[in-house]
Image (cartoon, rainbow, N blue to C red; front, side, top):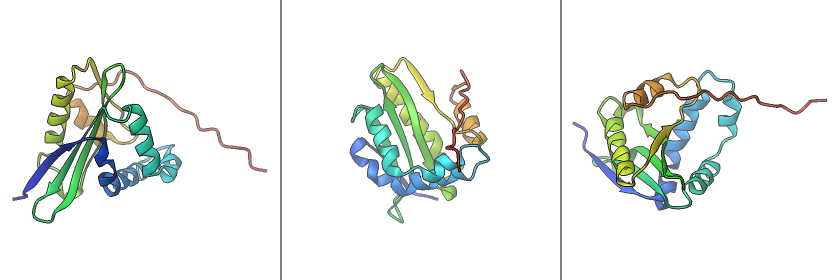
Length: 159
């Protein structure tokens, strides 16, 4: 049996998730998508800056999951609140060997509870194109597609 610890913290712990976030970014890069170049060029520092700006530097819950036996981080979830009090599940990652153990469910349970405690009016999650497994996972918590945003990548002319 796996012995896990769930640690609830804030934005001060963002740097701890870098290696796991990079695995998530690689997962997105490997999905069939027109936006692979975005993930190929996206850095953790850029993501960190976006999250801190979005949460105004502090309205953020980071849940870290540590394997007590190996003392390594095996999963995380980042949840933010906007100034309009909209909650967002921004990023979730569970190492492959820890999937199907209820880790993702526990991360969601804790994130949704935190949003409830903060009086969030609406909740959202953005799922990258091609990540069908994640879409099904979030739908299990009552999240439903509200709109579809189409983007066009403009590449500079090459001469």
